[in-house]
Amino acid sequence: MPLLKSLKLVTLFKSIFCDDSESEETIAAFEAYIANNTVVIFSFSHCPNCQKAERMVKEQLGVVPKMVDMYIRKNSVDVPSPIHAHIGHVIGSKEELPPLPQIWVNKKYVGSFEDLRKAINTDKLTKAMFKEISVHEPQAPDPAKAKVPTPQFTFDI
Image (cartoon, rainbow, N blue to C red; front, side):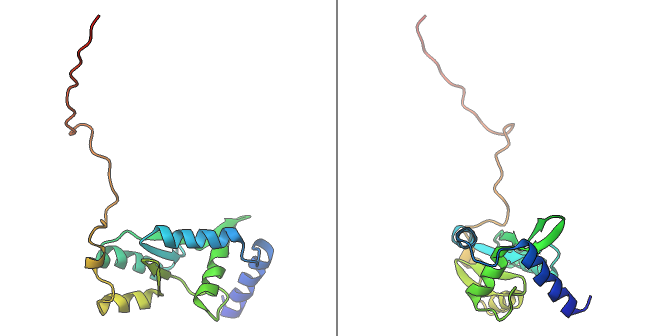
């Protein structure tokens, strides 16, 4: 599909399904993602650079990033999330919807996948900065292997 047609479709879908105003909920959701996660990657599930960024953060920095999909399903159509437009506003993008991924680390804007790669290759971001965070999700202990002390009860009948 030619670029002009795809841009017209995005604009059409936004006009039908999205509220152009930046709601307090949109801003609060964006700020919560940034504040509550060490690494946030605003992405699209079918974006190759988004997947590469996620893999790079896991492998090179040893951190499981929070992946936030910027497209939502409305009326059987994938439309841009209001957060996507808000990111464009925050980073000063000339584009209405900035290219994905957009990455934040420790509440600081890193940029795109290429910016992430440069930051890692020049040691501006290193695994040592994140040594307390594991790549693997925490798992509950195996109850079969857990050593549970036998309770000692004393009571009068």
